[in-house]
Length: 310
Image (spheres, rainbow, N blue to C red):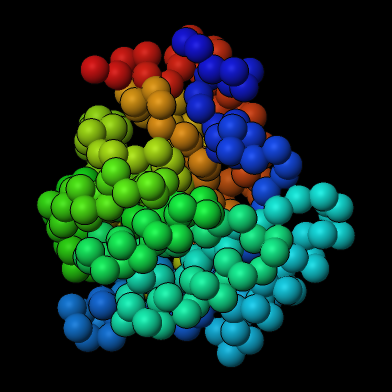
């Protein structure tokens, strides 16, 4: 075990310090993109768990435009920290799902702000092509570009069940297309999707470790109001295994021990607004509290990132 952050895993704060000499804050942006499993090109209804209102800040409104959203986001965070830079975070829906000219205009507008040192672009594995990769690769010469794919699961049966409308093979192909082009590649995983056993979840760590990723986001399955999954939970609750906080922490520490040791773990949980969250409700535990509990559990179990990585 050789992490310089006092933790038993490679955390995102350490990664940022390696790239920048000052604090860096993400500013979430909503540019009005949609997804191919919403607009009918691949499916309708979107992913069964998805309600973008569960993570979009109040200033994120597509009609405001990129510059205005950045201005309001920077204004908000600059009150807390006087000296910092920003990453434009294209978060809502699928942020490469448009023609190349519109993407170029939007990305360039975001990077034109003098306080913005890079971008984080959330997208789907089936919404990337060589033109988009070429564009992002060019932008990465002067800025940090983190391209984050929603992987969610490495099992095709799960991807089909939650209406992702793409396969894990397409995920592998997307990473292969984007690797070695100057981009920071990231993956997003949901822990506890319906039908997945503990063994399935731990195997995700092994499969994800084979991908050319630098960063990884994990979070627990949350059932959010106004989603297909909310209706499914009401009709067939027996099909869901919703972890208690202690169960999740125990599982995640095992997951960490199987993960490739050079992967940056960006986060462990997601905090949805209480007025939208149906389950699980962990007595209002915050992200930093769960992280602290994970840190303690790793020590208790004498585990660290990559201990059982093969």
